[in-house]
Length: 256
Image 1 (cartoon, helix red, strand yellow):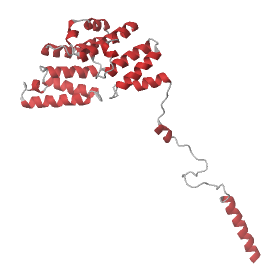
Image 2: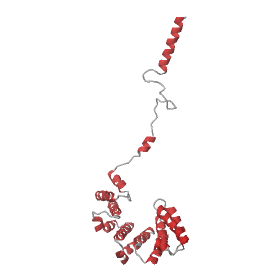
Image 3: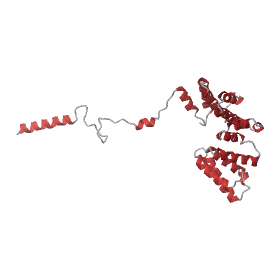
Image 4: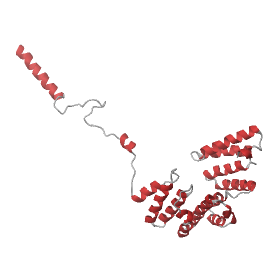
């Protein structure tokens, strides 16, 4: 990306770079703000492929799929690479065109992808099958050497999770639980909610302890200010005080 920005005047390159950094920093936590920064970068340097790609991902994160697809296509024309092929296919799904995503999964470009890209394409194709109501086909699509492998790769948790979710949708709860557990085992960064899905299957309900602490029951024996008890259980309260006063009055009369 730095190399691409070198084609711009120094001051302009720095401004574009700052906006791209903000896109990267915000895209997961605040995608709308990331999108706003991407539009600034795009306005400043629309002829830079890295800027078009960043704008595409920011639009994708905010579910502006038509805009994202246009940006990804522009970036691909500029670079000639196929790295964006899976996310372009997923944009077709987002636009309600799963059949186009499936068609892209069968194109020669898929064979040019690296292993991570091919796994991503498989996930998109399975999602397209589910969009079309072809649940069994989606399950078969996800069955692959990568799914069966015991080695943990960056895509492993997501692949296992997608397979478990498809199994659960098909009513195969026992198998789904097994694969959610496998997904959780591979998910070191918490990229999925596999633990929550496991708990849901097992009928486990989590309770927020802090909420319980906030709901402290009122003690009926305490006064309005939360101080000492109004009456003591050992008889040292108001009743005992009244007895003491009566005894004192009796002593005064005796003295008289």
